[in-house]
Amino acid sequence: MRGGAAAACGGIVAIRQRHEPTECLKIPFFSSSEPTPPPPPPRSPASRTQTIGGYEIGRTLGEGAFAVVKHATHVKSGQQYACKLVQKDRTDKEMFAIEVRILEAAGRHRNIVSLIDRFDAPPDAWALVSTS
Image 1 (cartoon, rainbow, N blue to C red):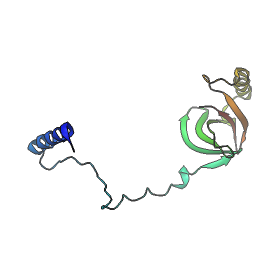
Image 2: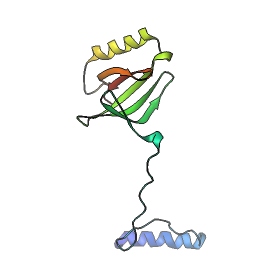
Image 3: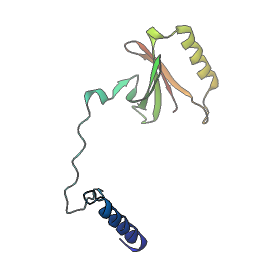
Image 4: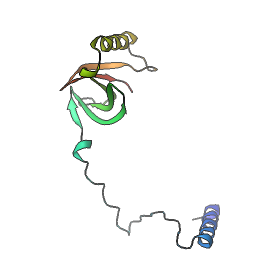
């Protein structure tokens, strides 16, 4: 280290050693002579993605009483979106239709959430793909 950074770090170490002799700065440093940290463990089956309607559905972004919002990547283009999966058995079909009509009427604009795609998601959900 050079200059003030070395002095500041030295001062911190000196203070910590005076008050907590067994607790040094525990910052892991890796150099080319040391082995690299082990790779992360493989993903569990629960965290794997699934493909629905041409979108790879990933991690959960949010949850509500009637729907869950997940990260979605369009398989062909690689574009990233949000996918709202609305449970059919817990949602009023007419209220869902109104929501879709409002999103369609709003159109696409960079400052609002825009509906990109919609489809049935097996086994019991409707999918609304939108900009996030």
